[in-house]
Image (cartoon, rainbow, N blue to C red; front, side, top):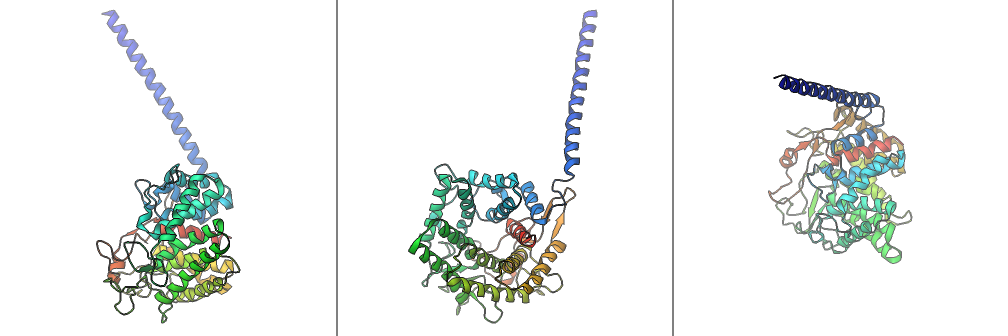
Length: 417
């Protein structure tokens, strides 16, 4: 009996000791966590510029860059590249290694050692797929990895085979025959120009630059509404689509983000287009008429822009974040680069302040959110998207879409210069 009691006492002491050790270990962990939190104060420090605050918030939400499009598994798509464009510029500005690692992780994850790109299918000739090539151009310049060069060459091959309209404009995708979308200029042309600058020489480079400028000339000719100066979302050369006007082939509405893509395409292409190219002055003239047109439809009170640009008072329309950020970026960058005169800075600043006041919220932990982003909009496909006003205002709205946060970071960087 005494032996049993003795055994019980030993077990009780062991259990009690383990408990003391466990409590002690937990208190150390708790103390460490609290100390680290009290040192940083918040997940995202509030004393940084908006550009860094938004990038750090994106990195918090999406710990790996391939997740930036709300992706559940690695997928070659375009929204990540827009946020990473901001990350590249922030790394160059601050030297913070975590920004570079975030960019580098995207390339490591998506590009196999043999240079193949995960989930990318060249034969689909989808111009959206060229945009993330911008990340690879940056990484190859920094790291000179053979796999990035091979991937870049595969993307450049797509340009050679991309179907075109009779006069030479790129189709948006092989499954969208004869269709030119404003979106496509941003998806393809900055990559095409930057690649040409880095890898193409002599007559081949001249031919490529002429082709790039022609894409903008063609869009101005076929998609511009001369009355408002705005450009329609898309044009169907065949005039066969249900969304296309039977006389003109144009889609029926001015979608904010489509115009946003087009503005960003122009200012970003000029980064790599040679200073002495004769088409450069034409693109700058397009920027001027574009800026004049969007300033006319800017909300006078909030400084923001609507999902359907020219119908602010119609039922269901709303001030949309991605288009607003893209317009602000296009105008302020144009002012900074000398494409537009200084007075254009005022509407850009009004728009930027409007985004911060009306569309930005900050969580208690410092994480920044950009609200009221249109998740996606397009034309045709299944189920069929008819380009009507009702279609655009009823597409899903979400917060922190890379198509909005990326341009917000880029616009912020332009204001922080």
